[in-house]
Amino acid sequence: MSACYFKPLAITHSASGASATVHPFGATITSYTTSKGHEVLFCSELAKLDGSKAIRGGIPLVFPIFGPPAADNTKCQNMPQHGFLRGNYWKVGEPYDTDDEAGCEFTLDLEDVAKSRGDGAWAPSGTMDCHLSLKVVIVAETLTTVLTITNTGEEDITDYQTLFHTYFRVHGANAQSDPVSCNVSGLDGYSVVDKVTGDQYVFKTKDSQPIALGEREVDRVYSPPDGKDVVDVVICTGGNGEKVGLTASAVCEGVDLAVSAVVWNPYQEKAKSLGDFADEEYSDMICVEPGVLSGEGRILTPGKEVVFTQVIKNL
Image (cartoon, rainbow, N blue to C red; front, side, top):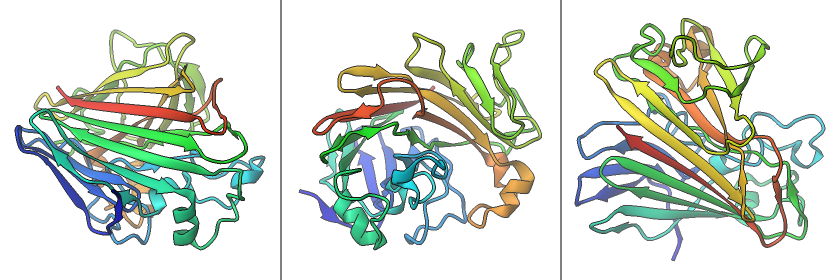
């Protein structure tokens, strides 16, 4: 049975020693430590953990919009950036710890969102009614998150966007300075929109070189080619050979949805403009965010659900 909690929840897999920390505010996972004591996720030392704003780091949840509302999206005009999942308290289920795995389920209903925000104007009755469930499962070297969005209203939810806004820790503070220590591979052939420069192109690896950040702000959306729905990438996260595998998939009413990937790092100037992010922390992180952002099939009819799964494996 779910209950309301306001303190971070520690999940430990006793059989392996792996652990995770989840804040009920936003159901945000702020830490995942493997059985070998390796921290996979980044959370800013200045992150607000008191519920005053979304948590800067870990795995914030995004739905039903990515970024601010589009001008033509009349249903979401008063909605906060990235939607309402990351800015509300979720109910916490009963944590479990077995030989096979440890985990917990978190849930959120629209009525709880309206109460906590005091303003449901962006979600009139029947338009965006939904039930949210996040299942967090850990084992020795793997963290799995499953976000299920169920339409409990009377109207279709259309053109929705949902992401795992995942922050990975880069060990050694060399996210920009060492392209060997920090890079992303597995996005060859994806169409790219560079939100900083405005460039659009198809990414092709040159001499087998993966994506590196370089000395600049990076904010790019990688959309998959036709026929490739699952994101499957490897992220180098440190100079001692640290690597993380990320796989993400989404299914809506039995149909596989195309999953894109966002690569983001604020670099110097933008980092200084973020009040909940230390000036030099851009060297300690890279965001690789799988998400359902565009494409066909994003119509969630009443009573139906979309299931969005992310698997992070320490390699």
